[in-house]
Length: 321
Ligand SMILES: [Zn+2]
Image 1 (cartoon, rainbow, N blue to C red):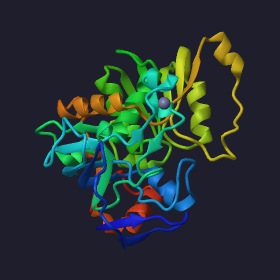
Image 2 (image 1 turned 60 degrees about the vertical axis):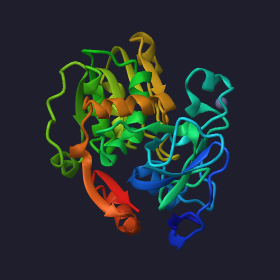
Image 3 (image 1 turned 135 degrees about the horizontal axis):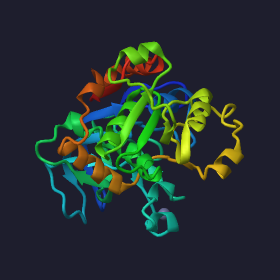
């Protein structure tokens, strides 16, 4: 099969690789669509904390089961599935608390094991989720990024009727916005980049006082400073987007958090149950994503797609092997 292979950080090649057969508790999936995200750009161009080389990247996968290994029940050939990208130990305290994304033994598809930038991908059966009938592959692929948004909104303890300021109108920021609306909150997108702003409508004047939740979906120190300064008493600010290592050490006024009983909370990745929740939200159209797809391209045009992400010229890019 053809696959995108990263052998060393900074480049990738399109190669023919052998198709393996699924082992016990595994299935082989024919990839129908894979999503490109900023993390893939980072992984290929500059590497990533969790990356083990050589690697086929791709952590957003929707496809059809083409072969099943032994000890596989609940799933059979021909079924459409979404793959939750993580595999965890299931025994440690984060796993038991439903936060398997924090498991020390977390293994992520596209980072520790081969991912979906290929014609086929192997996946353990416990990471599969059925795609409801009537939900298209192109919509279901948003389950992964939406899961990460739902995890962040859960950690923000966002509730109905609250206001939420979202910094960064890229695909993640907009998906957070849709997710927040689905939860009954009132989102406000904040985008300093005029070209990005022109790609979307629906920007409205933020409330004169602050937000109940502020979430930063852009790797910008200024955005974090603004978010902290726009927080209501008892407000929560979510560290959703990482910062470059030399920028991450920014100063914040802890007394503000003390006097106003505010919370600073991090969010990274998602758990399996967020995948199930995301697919429900997509299937019953509580979250609509058509306006987030900017490009549909063959996977083999990955270089062109990466440049679009790099130059922030697109929104969500879907790739087809
Ligand atoms: Zn664990």
